[in-house]
Amino acid sequence: MSAPENVTPVIEARKVTMQFGGLKALSEFELELKPRELVGLIGPNGAGKTTAFNALTGVYAPSSGDVFVSGERVNGLRPYVICQKGIARTFQNIRLFKDLTAVDNVRVACHHRREAGFTAAFLRSAAFIKDEASITRRAEEYLDVMGLAHRRNELARNLPYGEQRRLEIARALATGPKLLCLDEPAAGMNASEKVSLLELIRKIRDEFGLAILIIEHDMRVVMGVSERLVVLDHGVIISRGPPEKVRKDPKVIEAYLGDAYLAEKQISVPGEGA
Ligand SMILES: Nc1ncnc2c1ncn2[C@@H]1O[C@H](COP(=O)(O)OP(=O)(O)OP(=O)(O)O)[C@@H](O)[C@H]1O
Picture (cartoon, rainbow, N blue to C red):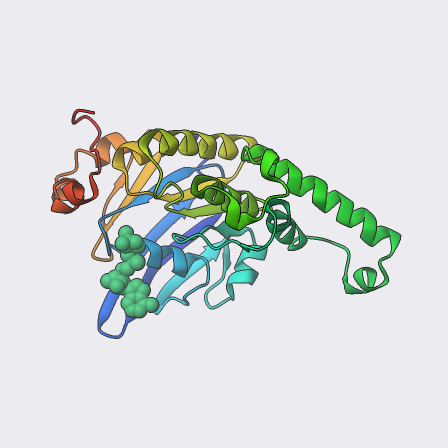
């Protein structure tokens, strides 16, 4: 599902470097996602994947290089401002409002793009009340998309782990993003849960017309859903392209697939048995 060549990318990273003291966690990172693209960002532990997400979403200001959202340079802008420009993310460690219900977790994100202002809220005007009702309806729709309608009134903390992860995605979707960045959304799930989550993610891309950038450790799973992969190792992009090309790239095999890391993490390599 590739976008036409001349379409402005939803996100572009140009030579983005992140330096922490003496450590270059990310070096001259280059990335471009067109609308509706689904791209996997992979690499061994400590490769710089989360650092790349943090630089794209404003958690870190790049030490050098530039990030553009829909053609606008966003270096140094706060994460919530970048989110307002259409970049939503989830985190490796679940960050829900654990003492709010599922629907309220999503409502909070819907508020992020509400139109009624503080005065209306203060006066609880008719417009405000109508707006609140429509926010609740929208939040319910996102819960439904993520298969969580039945959990509407449960506290986030009481949801099973896999459903907490889906609730995070529902909340990110509710900000109305052009790009959804998912940091290991399937972490901690078994193989079949991972496959069904990633199929759901692809469905979301198709239905909402979003671009999606996904960090995922399981090569088999990520190769199955991504149209393109970008491979990081020690902060440097060592390979990029369609999954069938990347999985044969000797640099990837050496850095990632051939790593003892695979055995340690019990990660399956596509084309190698079960
Ligand atoms: N805020 C920070 N300060 C110092 N070093 C950091 C910081 N954030 C990340 N690093 C270092 O940068 C390197 C890349 O880390 P990062 O978390 O981006 O890797 P990753 O590919 O996401 O790894 P994993 O798969 O284990 O999550 C690591 O050596 C890490 O220790």
